[in-house]
Amino acid sequence: MFACAGTFMACTKSDDYKKFTEKGEISYTGKLDSVKIMSGSNRVYIRGLFLSDPKVTQCKIFWNNRADSVVIPVKKKYATDTLKYFVENVQEGVQNFQIYTYDAAGNKSIPVYKTGRSYGARYQSSLFNRPIESAFTNASGATTITWQGMDRLTGVFATEVEYTSLSNVIKKIRTKIDETTTAIPDIKPGTSLRYRTLFLPDTVSIDTFSTAFQTQRVGADITATYFKNKGNPFIAAASGGRWRNIADWTVTANVKNHGGLGGWCSDQGGCLAMEMGWDGTAQITNGKIYQTFTLPAGSYSFEITMAKNEAKDPVYIVAAAGNTLPDVADVSTSLGYANFANNKFQFTLTQSTTVSIGFLATMLTASGNQFWIVKEVMLKSL
Image (cartoon, rainbow, N blue to C red; front, side, top):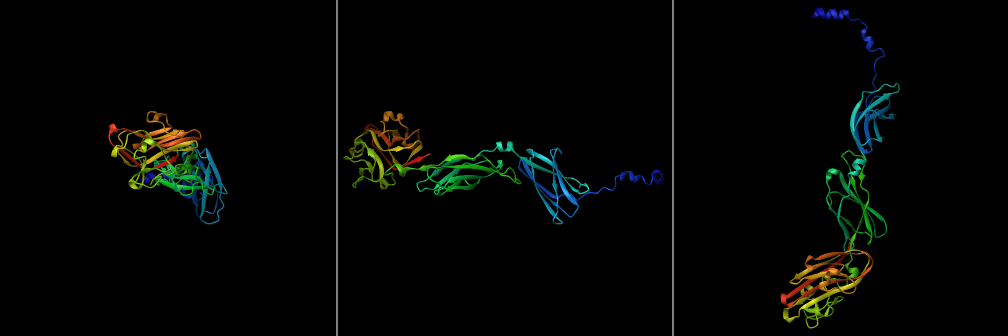
């Protein structure tokens, strides 16, 4: 073996190494160090360190199988300096990047290979606004938005809300995705709000994506605007015993079956009421208790708080166009109605309309003693 090796060495020319260095000695510049690539909207953000090589004059970045590139001039201020660069117009999807540094003579570093991702129209089209379960302003003027949930895997992290304040200023608030309600203390009555949902597609994204703004009408408790004597407690028209007439409500004569009194009872501090059968009180056919006023076009909900229900025949809560309620046989012709055990119903007006809203019942002796009382009514705009 030693003999063979010696023979081989003897047959190798002493200057053969020169063919490997014909063009001179290879010189490399210092490569970009500590490279991080952050995703963005049709772009990426590249950050890295230029270390101690003072010869570096430019940096070149290739992507899209080297079909795309950008040249970045380098002027170092310090021995260790930082590259911070937005690479624009990067096709959506995962991209492989090659990064070189160069000196003035054209010598380049060994490549740095990094993977990054750009998001675009495909990701944007997959986003949707967070659903609102309800947006409602109570009688005190405080508004609460109740949100539905969303899949966190979409990158959703917040919802942005714009609204008009009481001082006519457009305000903006942001709600985190883990918050199920948003309180707005100063929204201007009668206005709508706009909202959009914000997304970060991954943990290193530099850009926030959002849905388009969507308009949401804010419902409101408008009971006090239209109803007089809305309850909790209801007020009697005059002092007296347990049964009295009720102030501000229209009550048909057949409901006043306690010696000319009826529609109000003293139970639970004062309730709207109807009774038949006890103490010889007469039966009631198409008994009506209601109020009449004019509502603008819009959607509404009429709701009641039941105090006690011993009704056996159907009792309805009703909204009807005009100055009175229909009879029980014609209740289906009304704007909206429900068995009052359901507590509420909705109706819609296409134009300003005079409406009557209240209670309708036929309570017959054959069904036995009957009695119901209501603690409060509420009218909401939707």
